[in-house]
Image 1 (cartoon, rainbow, N blue to C red):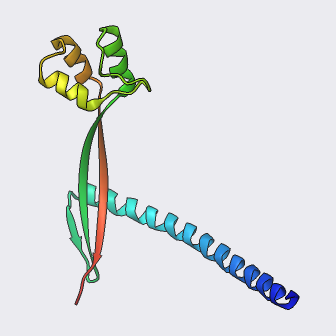
Image 2 (image 1 turned 120 degrees about the vertical axis):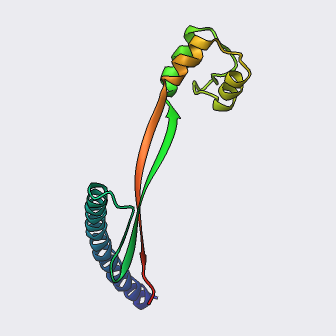
Image 3 (image 1 turned 90 degrees about the horizontal axis):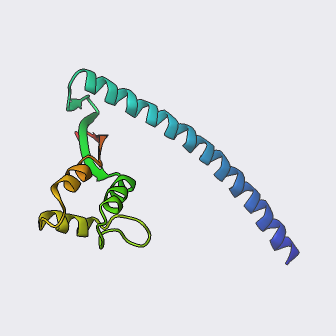
Length: 134
């Protein structure tokens, strides 16, 4: 039994060292890839290119636009205007209830305008790359 334990300890040490070495390489590789990704996106934006093809790869530049609410701001607006049923006890906005209230005209126009100012626009640039099959 002791002999088996010694073998397992040696195997565990070897696996741990290999794993650690590979994780360190992975971290470095991820940093390198992230830098290359940013450099490609910067150049494609400068040149206003959406697609770029080399002899090996095709790169696609996409702009994704998302909109969300500044919940703290909306909560303050709703509280200041004594509007019930939209703020949950965890103090977050029930966006479905808010949308319904706005759609059904249950909120005063000035409150809707203030809430519109609480929108957060977010733009994410995505880069996809595919190997060209020959």
